[in-house]
Length: 146
Image 1 (cartoon, one colour):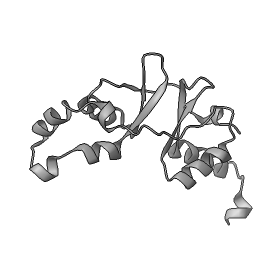
Image 2 (cartoon, helix red, strand yellow):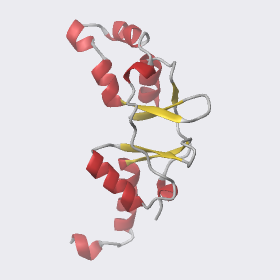
Image 3 (spheres, helix red, strand yellow):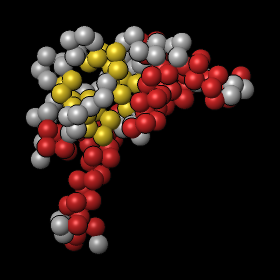
Image 4 (cartoon, one colour):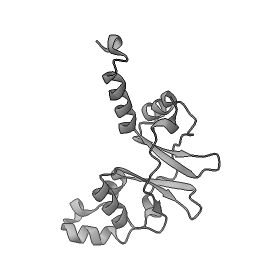
């Protein structure tokens, strides 16, 4: 099985000039934990995770109320807090290779990029777990896990 068989291709992404307020709104509305950041040519340039938003949030330190926190987050640009060195995977890579990256790099998602570095999709730990669950339901691995 290849990454392209499991990855999501309808991926919401951010632009460098977007604010953390926009990122937070998208994450909350779509129950999304990872947002790739792309440039005007759809080249992957970074990644913003829910963890990044937690780190950038100062509400707990300064005692901001929710609306004040959102106002504060609206002033911070994605480019200032995004992870710039993003671990990626090729759509033709095997799922086992992707899982190895999740484990070894302790990450929760892998942006899938083509040979030009353009965003082609996103593979998450949850996507892999769903696949594993489906294999278990089909009876695969039953004897190994019993």
